[in-house]
Length: 341
Image 1 (spheres, rainbow, N blue to C red):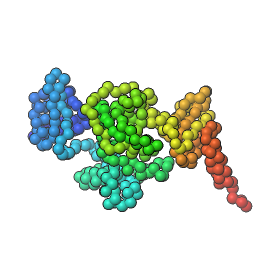
Image 2 (image 1 turned 90 degrees about the vertical axis):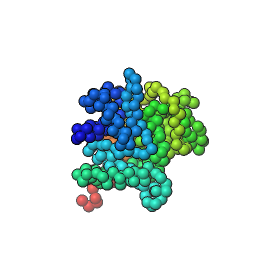
Image 3 (image 1 turned 90 degrees about the horizontal axis):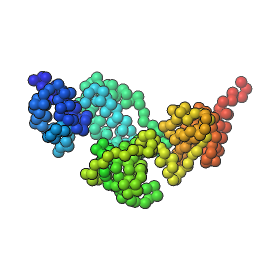
Image 4 (image 1 turned 180 degrees about the vertical axis):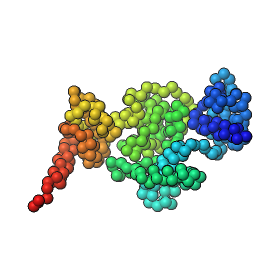
């Protein structure tokens, strides 16, 4: 009985971590025969887990959605990671909404994370709870732009979840979208990946109407993306990865400051140091071009360029050069020895 119970838990864990398992592969992972696997699947169904079986040569099993969320099976590392992630996601909930009750009324990601965190920590063993609380207590979530600190908390969790599922399942979706200019359009896309960049959430997708790749800010999506039921074969993204694509689009987007700086250091070196905040391109031997879109905050590029650790020349805008001069003058005064010493 103990062997049967532990095997059932192992089967449940595998089904929860993989969208679809071929029957033969799943039986091999568990070290059982196909007949025993079928009996274990039936036991999970009796416990309320909606396991779907696909017959045939290429058949297998998958955990389908049900009327209620069944218990999840996670290991120690997953439990700690889940608790830490939920705790960090709750930061800014009351700052965004004003009060705890306001946060509940807003139905934000932070408020949902707070409820989930309470449930997770309530059932965690004491040893895991201490680990999770220690990591979360000693970690702060921050951004170079303080005004954006609570932006993630304002996203509708249904929008986030729907976009994530569409990316995972390679399923086309439709949604309304409001651009920065206020223009509203209907979009029909093939979702690729979600990207969290400086507290903004983006959906990288191929726009079927415009026949080109686009990145969509999730806080500008109108309503919840609607799955169409149509699957697609993923296309090749015209960038190294989705994060790089979002950075490039942000740097090309209209509105706000557009920063271009020539850095006297190899692109590989500069990319390693500040590639998280800027797009870096080769511009001859031993130097590169850094571009950034800091919105209306020119202090952020000053900090980033200081981290680059190399000489640089501001190409645009001239206001950035003036801001750097102001910072430099203050730093120079701070470096002078006090009078009379």
